[in-house]
Length: 499
Image (tube, rainbow, N blue to C red; front, side, top):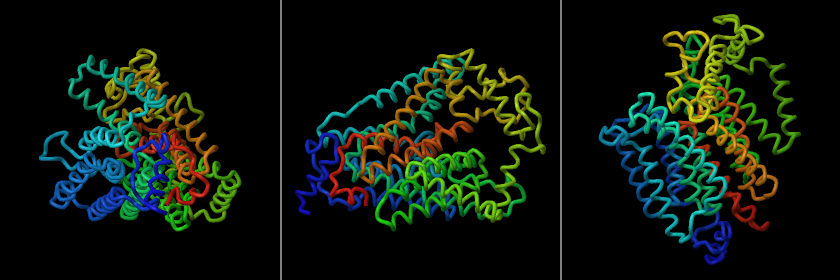
């Protein structure tokens, strides 16, 4: 294919067709930004494997190179910014890379600040106005309503700086939705971001598995639980569920077969590593997400996989680690348990404690239905609403993202969030039903499986305010939305749509 033909073909992938400013690039060749993202992800994974300290000379050198690359990408090649950001996000908690020890001066905040720069440069290069459709307006309304929750938090005595920092932690992951939607221009760039995301997820799964092997000899389940990059077992399990399910979707949709095999192996690694977190919510979420992916690809495939799994569990009970089976049995155990008045039988202390907190949260919502008790105030206020006094040291986290949002930010904010989830799901279903391009269909299946995992997981934990955990969700949502606006790829070019 000639250079002119390649330019015209890429232009057809963008909203508005050939009116977009063309970018000369070969159809399936990775850009420097994608190669850079893959390289940085490997370096960070190696640093974690070797237990490199976050303030040592090695990470200082990495931070300098990564910062220079981000700045150059934002100012000169904004299309390289998303894959570079994707490579770092899961590691931002363990490698914050502070600049000069100044509070708040870290790589995560640098990403947040350089994002608007990359968006402005990208739009100026393309010489077109940003599209702000119904989904973007809904998301902006969600952020605006949530911002009102800063007022009751300030009225409760929180300092203005603390309130703003708490809101910043909540809103920062959502900003990556806008950055991705405003920068990514065609399917080739979208595929590059997905490739870095998938590879980074595989690396994270491998690191978690290795940590699980190292901790496997501990005497108790709590001592054996792996915290991983998220530094919390339940959050680590949630990460492996959300993006491990996406790997399964890619394995069932991409070409050629060696890449399918790589993604399938990555999913298997994520599923096995997830078991080391001993998170019961992650177990349920992984089952739900994988079931959605298999059902979309083929109901028969779901039936075969489910039947084979059940048969293997009966015939070879040793396939499930004893520690995992013990963790599941503990959910309805008489050991360290107490009888809950609203439950049919004794629950383990963790599960019953959550019911106490949820009933207290319902009282919060009744008293503060519009703006909530204030962002970040749940743990301080919940003790006034529970029917039994909370003892010192007992967990006070809501253990449910939707209840937490309703209690802290009000019912309107919760309704907007649920509307966003429903809208994204409808977009994904429409793309899957109407498109035949592998990239489009793979992304739709991946998002629907991830969405199922997110919904189940967030009913048992709070997962919406950590870039390292939920940042990928918003990036995938943005890729889904912009891909839905691309025209369909001609039949003769579909085999090249995602390589």
